[in-house]
Length: 227
Image (cartoon, rainbow, N blue to C red; front, top):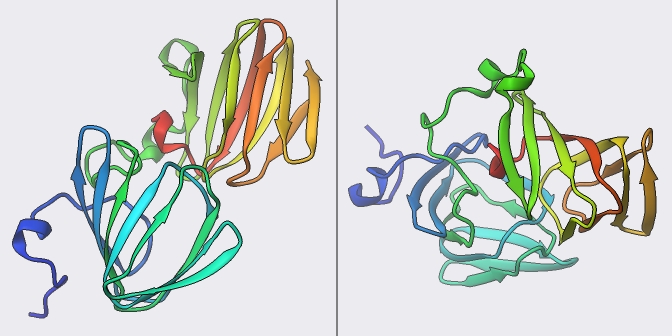
């Protein structure tokens, strides 16, 4: 039988990363604060623009075109690259491409089979069953999680500050109560109960709570770091 990957057994015995890209074989090494992926592509793939924590890679075979902060680069076998935290980037990957990539994020990806399928807990979530989480010091509830979307309920206290950040998820929100200051792109707005917003994938944004506030956020796809 043909080999699935040219990586040795010490790599292919690692858990497979749960990344829904056709033709990709990715093996996940989990560190305390980082993840390393050993990746092999059997098809041409295009990755749309996004951003996340810092990323470093070394190309083992093949070719990749990276657009980093608006500039295009071609990397081939033996090259290395680095993408700083929060910098927007996209990729065009050629069939046969192989690399080793380090993400400076401990939960960028999950191993296959380690979590319950999302569709199973995206139907009805009673308020007492909502998962409690915290982001940048702000408490929130993870509500329904589907295969392609997620709803959260943020509980801001007056004075809470969420600094500029970005993620590879489109985010839309609705202010249920209170007042927040939201900044992204050309916007710097005070939003009150009844106001709503939409933030594109990868766009830096920040929030300041001017008073106790409740905000419903909708993410596509679900945020991996909230699960």
